[in-house]
Length: 362
Image 1 (cartoon, rainbow, N blue to C red):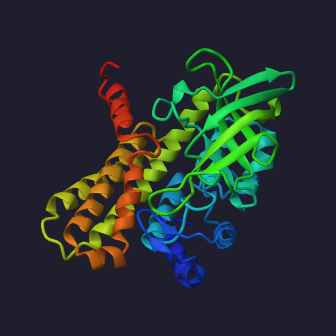
Image 2: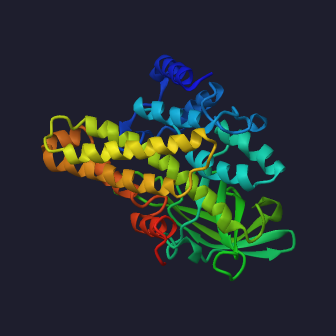
């Protein structure tokens, strides 16, 4: 099946199945909806139709297709305003799975990946800490070796869906070296010693959490990769996360800008969007050649997140209060600010681009 046939078949499937999709407020990336049972059902429906795990090997429940087909799926679901990737199973699909696929052992792949696709397990992410967000290598949560186990003590913050999760992908310190002293672990969230405290957001939601670890035992078989390779695994996760975040915000920006047709003076934003789309098409060429997206994902995420924020700021600055409230533009503006933080702040991404693309000094 070629790309055009895949896109047409997907559009027809969406047309047939969108009536039963969880409906909610289209804010900034996808449909926000609090009925988690329905979100699980929707993810399983996507999986059964062959629209999840598109690039994953077939032996782990995937379709074994070229990455371009996954990009097409993102485009079409976002265009239709339907949950895809950024829903209840997003951490499993976007964070845990890429790490396990590239660095995990065979037992981990067979145990976790099919259950991630089917939404049988929900995952959360344990990266940021109160004193180590943008400077991720400064984390202090420690995993101390005790025979066949690690004993974990510390604190993580901004962990989406931790209050629902079965597992966490946890970056912990196992040595003193800034980068080589980090290890990536799979943590069972239902065991003793873990406390999850929800964070109330200004949007009114509480998807984020603080997670506390008090002498939590993690078997050594739950190490992803090797002890001391945590930074390498984290970079795999962040590159994938930034690229997929960039895709969602690019197409959400396009949709949001179309909704501003009655506001004048948007020529500069339209030019920005056109330039971003041209850059995105260059990335598609790389994918078609079988090449990985590296720092380009950071560029896509940086530019698309700031564009999205500008669009919502213009909306709330130009519409009357009744329109802002009725169309939920204010929620989009509040939530869009988080997009310039998640996956790496704009400041950190500019440093990354400066050092790795422009070869500037640290």
